[in-house]
Image 1 (cartoon, one colour):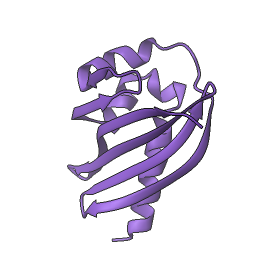
Image 2 (spheres, helix red, strand yellow):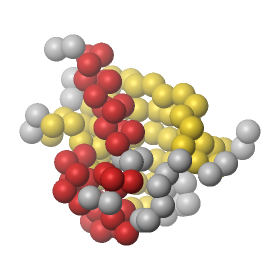
Image 3 (spheres, helix red, strand yellow):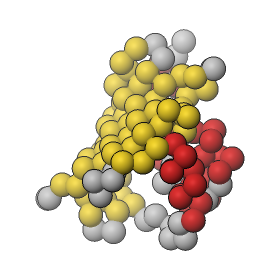
Image 4 (cartoon, rainbow, N blue to C red):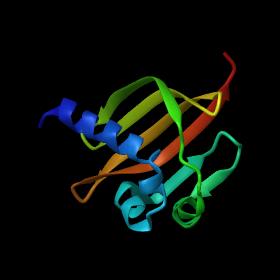
Length: 118
């Protein structure tokens, strides 16, 4: 098992979640999000799988972002942590996601964003 390729694929999937075409497509979102998904947003709100799947397709704005840094940490054979710092609309936040292998597919089970001051 080539861990680097898996981690590269997970980073690719993480970035897909910033893509308007993916965010506006429930079928594509369901490929990436676990049914157990939960997000602690930088706004302070908490979102479940159903809330995320039903709200993201209503977004109309394309996300323009600048990735400042991104790294992965293998927590187990079936769990990978993604840590990154990103700037969106002049707001910088630290973000973390946990991806878990479910039925041979990697799905995001947790995401958290925390605004920071630079």
